Figure (cartoon, rainbow, N blue to C red):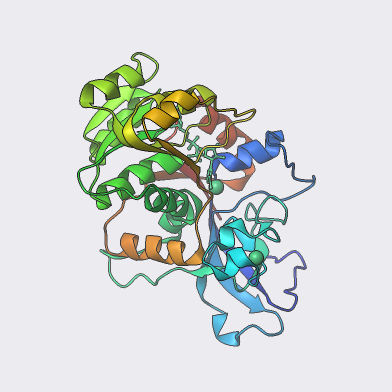
Length: 327
Ligand code: NAD
Ligand code: ZN
Ligand code: ZN
């Protein structure tokens, strides 16, 4: 395979990609949905997994041949107050893979050696972390693992996950690992069937039933994790909380504005927090959980040439949780 003349600069690795997940963020990027726009032309993709083929100056040669994941956080300064306090995902100097720097919808890409994360070797069939599984874990996995941490889910709390796509199907599993009872909300029956298969305690189709009423009948949610790219779904997630509840916002809908009644917020003691991806350490933990057979990645493969059709498939809602480009 050609590396298209890419040569790693100091501190970089050249990676031959094996798999690259299609995150809904890539669709927002292509559409220019967000206030901060990428500058075309650019290569999207931030769920890249592949083999290091070459290293630049200052990078250990032993990295060559290693399987690594290339996440959204492509680079951070390593020195600011956020970076040194474990919040590198908030670094103001960060560069984002497949958005502000070229990403992983390619046979080869360059990445900052310090921000790629080693993918554990497949030791046996039980604890294998294949590239096809590792790709969705690299954004959808780490993002929702972090969201569950940020929510501080405690055993026996009720966790409502809004949107059971790439992110949501993993959010459900991390909420269960934390000991929560789960409610899955989506607008597609197939996604809800998948949620039940993954152990969801309750499901609600938001197209045919009001999730606020349905979750209210269960006693309300202690935690709501909003992953759907739908502003209305955020309103419903907020309104489904019981007193003391926490809303963790993960999805990034175009023109996403959340209208919050201050009275309810205050009197019910509700917290609302945004959660952006996760750190390298979080991703290492996500891989460890998967290697220990504690999570399942539901995905199908596609070819790079079909990426536009794949975007349309994701938007139609008729895909398994994740599509992954296989090289
Ligand atoms: P996805 O397309 O795989 O999943 C979205 C799911 O939401 C689908 O199952 C869809 O059927 C469902 N849905 C759509 N409308 C709904 C509604 N009204 N109510 C309930 N469910 C509904 O998307 P994804 O890759 O999981 O990404 C979701 C969002 O999260 C995107 O906006 C993406 O940009 C964002 N995201 C944020 C972060 C972060 O760090 N905060 C990381 C990754 C993705
Ligand atoms: Zn993503
Ligand atoms: Zn920093």
